[in-house]
Image (cartoon, rainbow, N blue to C red; front, side, top):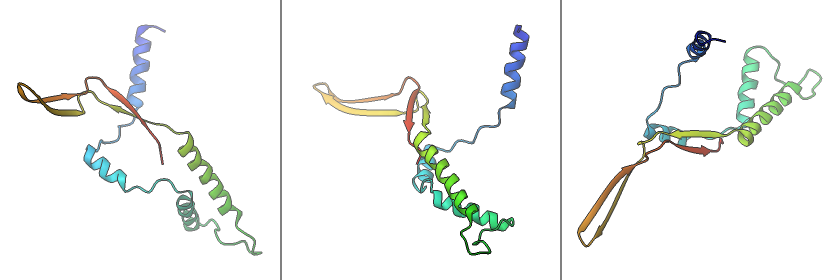
Amino acid sequence: MNLVDIVNTITSKLDSVETPASQLSPILLKSVSMGRPGLSPYKITAEIIENNKAIGIPTDANPDGSENLINKYTYNVVKCICGAIKQDAVVQVAIPCESILVEAKGGNAGGPIVVIGNNKLDSRAIGIIQ
């Protein structure tokens, strides 16, 4: 593969990338995220069953009175997916350099001292999906 092929390959890959999600300001991000309840297999299953009903998939008990196995199957799949997301997924956050502002105050024999600084390097944080 020559240089032109490499550049064309990289360019085509970059062109195929979708537009990134718009960024929220930190205060709005914090406000919005604090009210989220977290993943609920029951809530997701209920929504899927309602959607199934809307498109004509039977959700009531079977004609013979037995339990609807599609509903049980749906819950089982959703529970496994939510469990995998909660237990196996990792959230990694990049904190850009100069994005954290620090102000420290103190004093010595010469009088009061105010120091202002910020993070000089990009940092990484990890979290838990709930």
